[in-house]
View 1: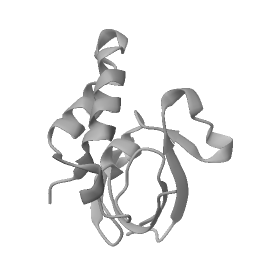
View 2: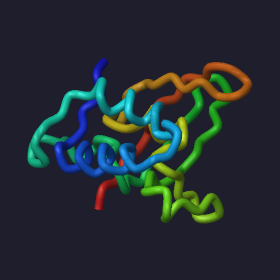
View 3: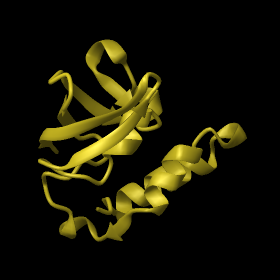
View 4: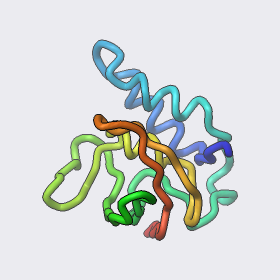
Length: 120
């Protein structure tokens, strides 16, 4: 399954990646170049995008996590605002509610189900 992102998010993220020193945006860059890029009006409201509020559940442990995917300057772990550069953010971008994703965590690969997506 191929992620879907809007041209607006693609352009914003591409500009951000280009400005990163030493290729620190490599993973995000790879993620967005694999995505199907569409017009804003074609994005489903339940698709994870920049500034989305997302709830996911790890399949094996049944642990749920709630977060918002934000630009790096607005990241704040205490408020569950996760940088778009974080591996979980890269894994979630472009997928929608009920999709299953894999994310390689430090302790190994984990599978997650996207439970809820809110875009305001």
